[in-house]
Image (cartoon, rainbow, N blue to C red; front, side, top):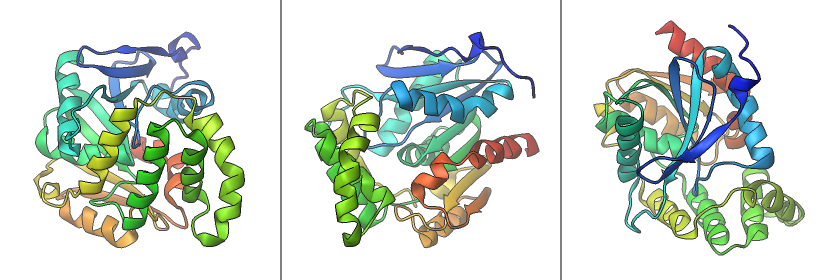
Length: 278
């Protein structure tokens, strides 16, 4: 792999015509669309932007231009995960000539990718779904709903305490979550502007999400990366998801939970190996 120059690593950001914000690095001939988690999507700032740039470096070195694209702004309150997939298909058609080489979608973004793959099969070549299965657990819905409500009301400390449950779940970790909450909310969550009504819309969409009916319609090869200790998408649901997708490669990160998989440097290596193998 050729190392790209510092100039190619300089971020570019803007807004597409349909109201979806983007952040992009690199000018390689191949395109990679990254669909971020949620509820809530925003162009990352500060520390979060630096973290994503490091995460994307292997893709840049492999000759990809990387595009992180948010959900569109001012979504209707009843907007579903399938509707959000339609929004991404629209931006692929209008801004990328109708085709993206690789889609990498994480958590909430992976839920959207299920519908993007099933309903818009010609929009991309390969798709990697990271830590997202056919349905969110009841525990995950509860935590995300509380975090989204706090974010939407501007309570970054409350959002941080809810987010801390990703790291320290259960009643015995309550005291530690109270300590971690302000730091998480202030350093990570408050750094990106999340439109309140869009956060609420995404949270409602997550509660009703169940992609089992559309997964058998996916015809492209899919890479599914999951952690066997993920409380948002339990192992049995991830296994069911892989069985429902006709051509699915499932990779387990043993002993990894939701955030630990998302932060792993293995993800980019596994995605590139999958793309190159195909």
